[in-house]
Figure 1 (cartoon, rainbow, N blue to C red):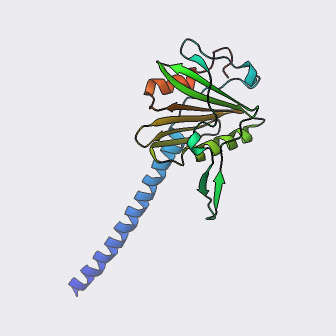
Figure 2 (spheres, rainbow, N blue to C red; figure 1 turned 180 degrees about the horizontal axis):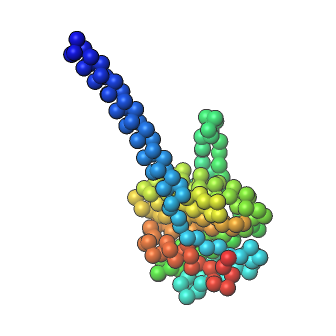
Figure 3 (cartoon, rainbow, N blue to C red; figure 1 turned 30 degrees about the horizontal axis):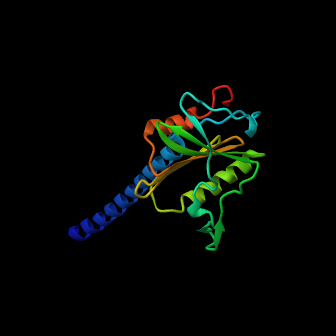
Length: 206
């Protein structure tokens, strides 16, 4: 009889241990997600709200302006990409059109060329919509490194193609959206920091 009771107690303790493990695992998962959702930050810089696209000036101590960059940012994605929505329907997503809300420029950084695309929109919501569209298009290819941060005051993404063929940085803050592409190579960490924080002349930064 004692052996039977021991077996029942063992099952009871086993169930209790599983329940405790589940609770512990859920707490750890919440902590993990919270760390990356709220703890990780990226410094990004854009022009002030009162600056127009035609008034943009750049940090020529670091970046040498070469001329205009080709549009769209990736010619191979010019015909759009297929994206599955949450309801299962597949839709075609395209780059934003080339109009007077964007400037396309090419710079030299450390003896290599980067293409820079800068949008100024009418509202923060429209800027975030542009960022979302750019992210969907750029992240549709096979990637080696894909990171994304969405904060209340800015959005940021880093996309590195499989094989390191090129890299894209996209960030949004206020009404501004910036996409930088390094065609044919990946950026060093210090180059990423320079692009994100030092691209614009200090006189027009927000």
